Image (tube, rainbow, N blue to C red; front, side, top):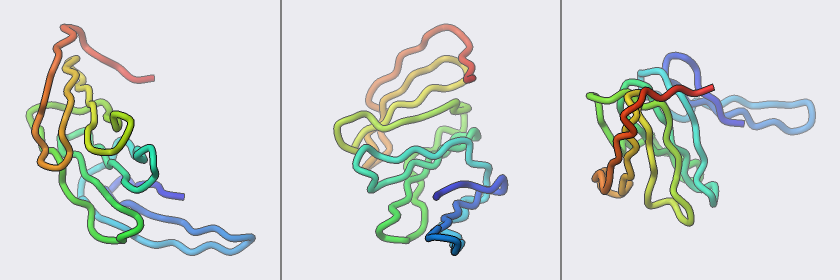
Length: 120
């Protein structure tokens, strides 16, 4: 079970029977608004509402790597474009939809919906 603490810490709980073990996986020092696994469960996107998006690979147990930093926009959400885990799509509160190439953080395409977006 992966979850994030309000301070920007990614935590993992390994639960087996009535026993559990907690591990701190990464600390990105800013609140994480959502966690999204890639379709093959090899990568985890850590989306912040302050702009940066990070990637964490559970099998490698390393640090979270900053993929995107769009501090001028407030992300509402992001997700992988399937199949694969090379691209993601994001939406900002202002209604801008963007497609990103995750290897180098380049924005490939954007579309402005001209409407404020909310999540429920």
